[in-house]
Length: 128
Image (cartoon, rainbow, N blue to C red; front, side, top):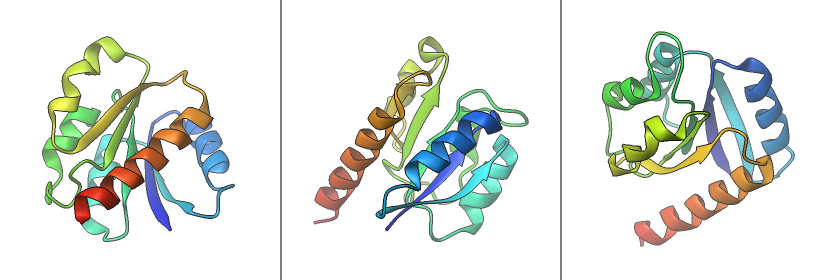
């Protein structure tokens, strides 16, 4: 089971994404965080999150600030997929060890699912 945190202040988008991903037996969206502070609290106090789907532009902390405030950065190495409407501002985020990839928010949800599955395969390979 892949446990996912969706961090996005657009609750309509986050709920639709959660409903889509939860259709698959191997995926469980554990939580939706509505702002950066909530995201940091969940990540610093949870042992079950495998993948973070993180919006760049959120209230309180931006996605970049969230990455800076994660206490156990090694635990979340290559565990974050940024999903943003502003790819020009997040292009260099892939240099961060926590970030696996950056996707444009208007991307088809099936492509997000494919990227999640790609990340799971990548994480399995790097564990061995």
